[in-house]
Image (cartoon, rainbow, N blue to C red; front, side, top):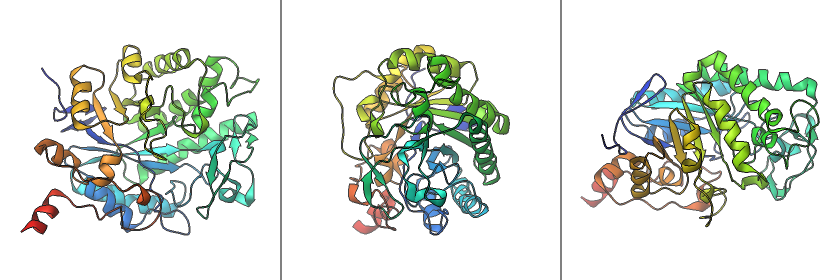
Length: 374
């Protein structure tokens, strides 16, 4: 049977009607104080929900220490849980499914986000190159983080587990663990950012330990079939990068493959860092093609896909579903536009991060455009 974007697909216990997935997208529009999901956030996600469609939420910090960008909605307070409940209700009212992305940015944070102005935590005290977002939306150089004490790693894993439990309370259908784009878990995975000499550093097996322990803890809350993991092999976002990515990620994916997860979510290297700028890196490998043989479960792939290239990836067997990011920002009814081969709204990059309804909930749907033309 030929597979296309509108073939049904099972992700764990969830039966999807199509394979056009909404990728996790940082938008920095949580209400203040408290980084609480608001009615505007619920409207945004509700606009993009479809019957039998899957949405992966924007990254949601698992704790205040894990916060790294202003106005990103967390999942660690009662107010945040209540705010996310309105989001999941909006998605479910359309017949859609939504997973929460569990996020800890590690060294990519800034002391302005941290309790008592402390330095961010990371596997090792190595500053990233580039600029952080402060709590007041300013851009400043990254600070040198503090290396997390080994005695606190078990607490960190408990924080992930509690966030996963909070996501269940908020009505989500599953969770995705963010292990990509230079954030905390990837900082542990990669040798450039992990110079530890204990059981969480050194060998590839040791550097993979935190991710696997977080997956195990979260799976105890949800069941592994409702858990996904996002990785970015060969990625360069947020000053990430690994000298031997094929060996590292081959090991990581083989270990994850033993855990019967709902899905693996890979970012194609050509799109690494696409949230911050228009990028289409050349002469880079395809993560999906390289690592598909090591993964026997469902595979979601993201990164500069258009409808035609998405169809080609599915037809070739390189992925089971395609996650679209920027196209979903500008097209709240993206699956229907693809189904009808309709024109796509262009996105407006200056409104990606922060602000209100402009560039968030005011992109027209096909029905809106038809009404305007009458």
